[in-house]
Image (cartoon, rainbow, N blue to C red):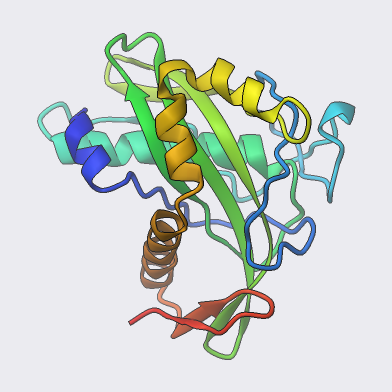
Length: 232
């Protein structure tokens, strides 16, 4: 994996499926992340606005597979397979907090990638999941969430697989939890999570890629109370 390349592109992650709706997030700046936990991929269906502590989850029919084999001769293929595997995991792991909706567009801002030990790969990032409904040619945001933390997995015989996620807690203890998870990466995390320009740029690229990949007639996206953001 070419780590420098991923950092230069801010590691935009797209998945082409459906997720769901929780609560209206206005501008989409959601700070409510579930209590830090380590979980396995669940085959259970999402619930609406569940308390993460109650274990509510259920099957997501559009879940992407969480592992992909790579072409050993292609770094680009390897990176694409890495992203698909990670997206498949995020769909299963974070999808449990949402009910199915029309268009779900996650994106990730990478803080760091530790893949030196292929048996213990760690992706440190700010993971977003946002849902939209299509109104004419405009995607209107309905809900979403921000889930900073670290996703853990491995690469065995050319196959990427992610199985665990530890999330920064919300509310009391947020800073302490982030420092514990990100460690020496905390300053980079703090800078990125508060950088609206980075967030908006990555989000816009994610929407553009989703629209293109799905062949949608979409000219803009918007958040409640805000002007539409043109895609061109």
